[in-house]
Image 1 (cartoon, rainbow, N blue to C red):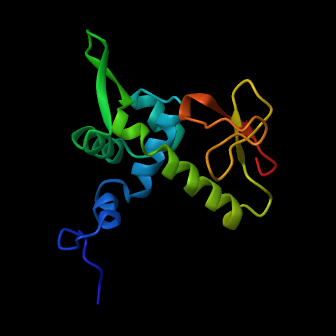
Image 2 (image 1 turned 90 degrees about the vertical axis):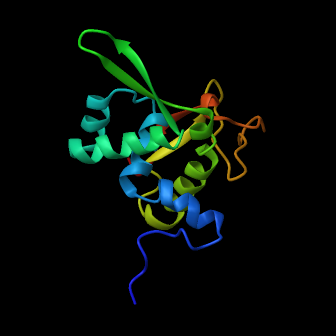
Length: 149
């Protein structure tokens, strides 16, 4: 029996969340937004995704309130895509998924280390700094090349 394409009949927050972010391109768009990518062409360059797929994913993320379109040019009209508060709240889930992938699918070591900006420490599973113990948020961290880079 094939799995249904939607989970509307399931009373489950995981299933409902997957309806919104459970697609690989959607997650990679969100990852890129956390890395500072803002413009359509930059998302396309970084991800190598087809324009129609990217248009669809950005539209869905905006419709769900995870990202918002912000004009940056009037003629021609152009927009940046920025994470909303709802989108930023995905950061712990993204970091947990990253660390899980590092443990199980990075035999050469993590390709990226999430470092505490201005500190020598790195992100722990509890989203704190290994060096100073601070609770870390997305603006507190920066990507650093890891051994698997």
